[in-house]
Length: 407
Image 1 (cartoon, rainbow, N blue to C red):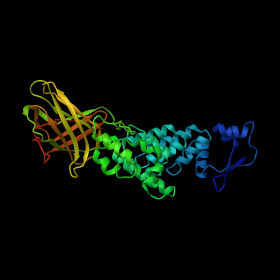
Image 2 (tube, rainbow, N blue to C red; image 1 turned 90 degrees about the vertical axis):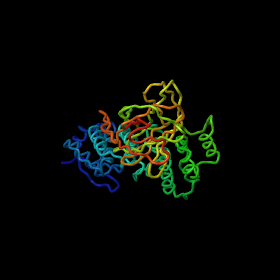
Image 3 (cartoon, one colour; image 1 turned 60 degrees about the vertical axis):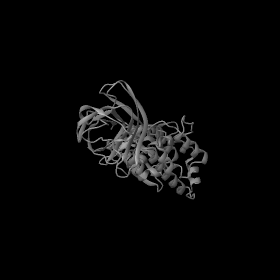
Image 4 (cartoon, rainbow, N blue to C red; image 1 turned 45 degrees about the vertical axis):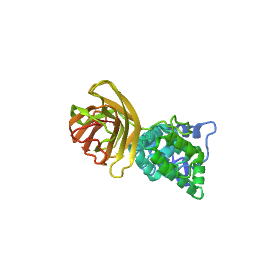
């Protein structure tokens, strides 16, 4: 007893329906059949709608049942928006939120922007912030459009080192050249990136990272390379056309893990580095160290601080800092310029090369420390002796009593 038929999709699949049911459930169908320009034909063509999505829409209008899956949810979302069925639209968004992960975040972000779903787009971006490395490694990243890439690179909350972000952008540029039929040359990669390259924050790289990766990529002009090298090496730093605002996707409150039970004195400095090796059971972002200061009067210290990947020796992050100690046994914070991503079950070396008078030091150190937070759960640190250029710090005693981090 259908009183209207639809020719749906490119193959014009014939699908019957009842005008009354459609008008009750959709303002768009109501206007289509009862408005001033009401359709009177018995068959209505819908070439831009997928048959499976249209059937899912009809099922919802007839029975209030949601019939969607991974392969049909985006086309059903489009159809629900097109015919103003907000309850089905929300069901699609909820389905996507439950199934969103780092592997499909970029693909869904592109779709969310295409279908004008700001809520879903925001959730995709939050997922990318929290799992930036994994999301950039997924296949869907190189398939995104330039506008989506721009929206991601503009974010201050990405949880990844800038050199890794640059490498990912180079992969996207290569894929874009292939899509456009262009030869894979640095000039063409720069051409397809356009102004997006300005969103890479080259000053956040170490000078070694910049020299090995960015400076030799061919994507930067000679003047850009020279100005950035000067920015790394000259004081005061000359201005460059690339942002130096740190990125981080830190959640919850700042946390501090302490590894010593007692405080002693005295600890001297001869130009070598105090080092301690550590590993954690989950990903964190280290933002600084707590260090001991003078055992006498208020004094100033300069410190070069680093975190290195122990096996490879790669410098994950460094900073030349300073602090004023007030003569107490308190620790004094020295922070990195940007958060340093620490991967689980990987050995890292925390290093501090200090210049200043004799200081307090920690004793009765703990080899294993579990830090628990109500909002972030547990993080377990394992500390071990760091061989090499070491001023004497060990698991049992020495400097670097605190590691400051976010989860």
